[in-house]
Length: 176
Image (cartoon, rainbow, N blue to C red; front, top):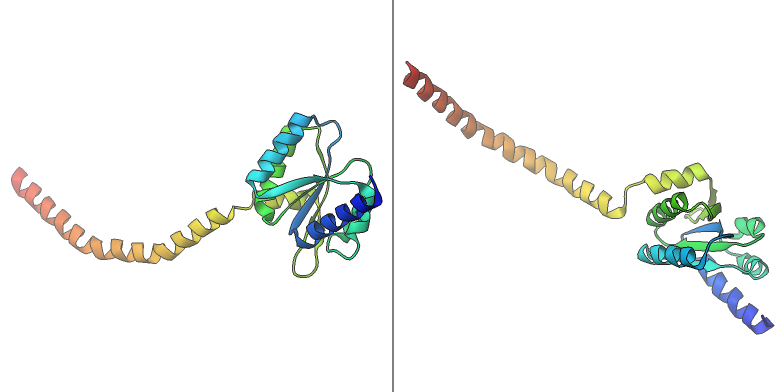
């Protein structure tokens, strides 16, 4: 790879490191092309991507970005899985890693307002167990709708109780 290509790659990686909200470093040794393509397809569905890294170029690209703390993990064969939706990406990756023992999670980095933090495996599993954005919106809408529903049920109970009372009286007179 010539110097111009390396500089172009470094600029591209710097852009990724500056804009991604979450990144996972994977050791993809032993994965076949089919497995890698399958992972990329699943990531594409989660609006995320995977990028095989050249470690020296990636270390240069990391300087001055929020992802700089993971520079020491760039050894051997590494791929960066990155995206903007941490929960969705963690779910997809957690499921894929449980199904495929060849790919190994090295580390994860989450960018927040305070800069960012390296995530432990327990934190990644916890992140993957969170409900998705759509599920949270549905729960919120249900909670907004619950008081009105309860009011309608309460107001409807008065005439319903009256009808049940009349039916019981009519049944009692019919049996007597």
